[in-house]
Image 1 (cartoon, rainbow, N blue to C red):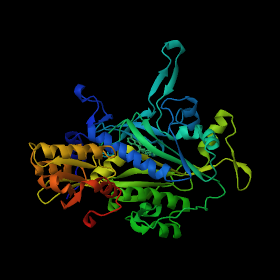
Image 2 (cartoon, rainbow, N blue to C red):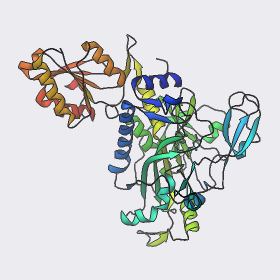
Image 3 (cartoon, rainbow, N blue to C red):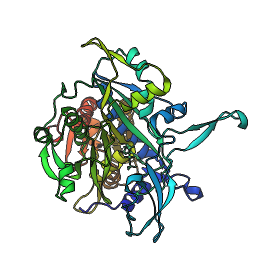
Image 4 (tube, protein in one colour):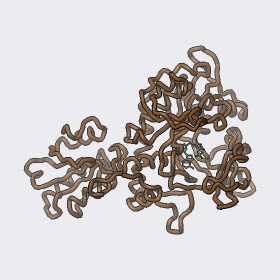
Length: 482
Ligand code: ATP
């Protein structure tokens, strides 16, 4: 099946209740989106899965939930105020607006038509607001353009409270705002979005001591050398790339493997992923190496997740600006050190949302849509149907099954239309299992459970249903083994 275009995906999301343009009633507003009933669930499931994998299932990472508006001095220290790296530009020929890195201005041309660019001045990505209702007393403040800086400014408090020992990480999921000059491609570039970020701190003298296993994942690798020589990306294992010194630090290979494995464990397709090394001119001066995870969107290979090496830059900046000592005691050497951030995995929730939808979208032989979302991400885990609407006994059993399952899972109950229609409706929104109660259920106390991806059906006892559903969702048993 050909990949959907971004416009087709936008329409699908609207039609099925995943995503609407914000303020559509009044003509919308560029770069802002509302999540409908199914989109809200999918987004929550993505964030919950990310949090479980990156925080709750680990011993070395804890969470933070920082505020959106904070002391503006944080943004002076971070370089977001008064130190802009981008220029806002307009194409002299086709009038397309874009932002480009200042360094590229002399050589860059319009992405769309190749025309000459006109600079419209420095690009300040931050939305401003004022804190305090009385105008003359109020203070200019900003909506945060990333979650990361809150992690740095609270770093010392969190490290002390959670008694963290190096190496450790601090994670945050939350809204970020950027006054993008050209929001485009549906959710890909919006002005209000969510980020899932980790700052991972290590002792700066131990950049080669990564205690974690690098998973043997094969992925397309697009190194600086391949980009400069106009070569194609190469399929290679991350371990080999490290051995060949294409990936310079074991920590980077580890974080790339960890992030890719999260995506793949949730059904994202390997062939749509590649990792791209930042060119020297893209890389910050303090970074040893920086990689992006890119995805093959319908509009080309684009950044899905950045995995930057931030060195000691941010903590140093906050230390200098706040005049407070942010060093911590390294237990092993018993010395006071300023940790470095060896990796900052930073992922937009909405970009992950698009990836999971694109990779799940498929058609069966009859051209019906099946959204093959991983059961953990699917909005509804199961749909419960009485075979016929008019049989009171069937309705009673069906309602009982529904009431019992909904205590643990988000499930739906549906009695309208033919069974075929009800299956099709649920296939289209990604419900992995449909449970039908029929005449035999009354005497045998069992139900039919149907698997979304291949239409297989099995008969199981109502008393086992909850446990089996849990095992199916967690992929502890295979449907065909039931
Ligand atoms: P770009 O160059 O595309 O503007 P960036 O390199 O500035 O992005 P980062 O600051 O590295 O982006 O942001 C980290 C992650 O946050 C990105 O990889 C992406 O997933 C997400 N993100 C950034 N900007 C947006 C946006 N405008 N809309 C949606 N997601 C975004």
